[in-house]
Image 1 (cartoon, rainbow, N blue to C red):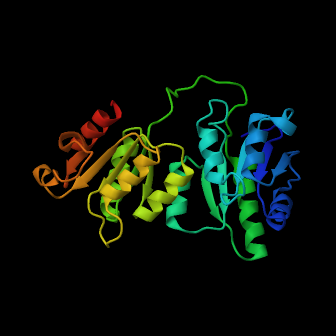
Image 2: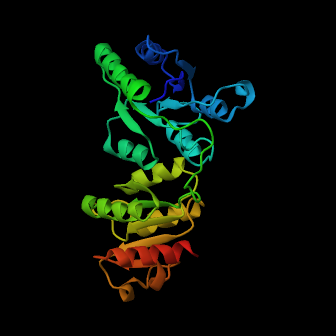
Image 3: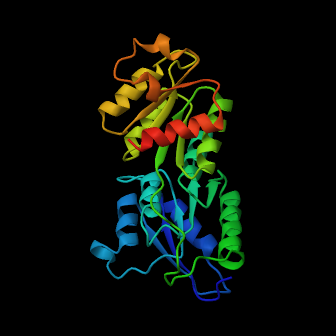
Length: 276
């Protein structure tokens, strides 16, 4: 438990929500400092001590709205986790979205907690006070001094797209436990939206045929590869590789994985494609 004042960065573009959050975070037991910025661009400048924020303190904790102008909260989170000096800072998402895909995406990005903004003022205030009690008085925050790190490099990013929720969850679990950073989407549309906000995927895994119609996995992969958002694709199919000769641009031996597949088969194919 930290006994010294905590430096908090609140990233919130709604003035009313920012005011209510500041009020709820007031604490008679400590002299914590809460700094407020209104968009993702300002947040990154504060965190990296750039422009008007060259003298800004390093935050011990960040409360982050995910729907922000200029640079959204997911991009701020990604930048923090990719930075050796910022990646240990706990980030608590405070968002108006209760969509499972948004919550999953935030946790995939290594968020520490996700609070869906309650609609009522009293409920909102109570929720923020609960966060305050946890993070100000119960949780042990990372040390400010540079401590030895077990981090060995930026995790490779894999986008898993599948309309089959059980297979999607299984694939994501296997890859996460193997040390990869995994983002997931349950449709081609969600995958393309992620591609618009994430710099580059090291690999995309998707089925050849998307259930429910719409864009095929092949077309999705080609679209994202043309936009230079990924380096490689692994297509999952019920069909044999011999029946997939009509799919141009993909090596049947390397880019296709027969379904159902074993953990070993998936990881072996992933390692092969990521190795180039």
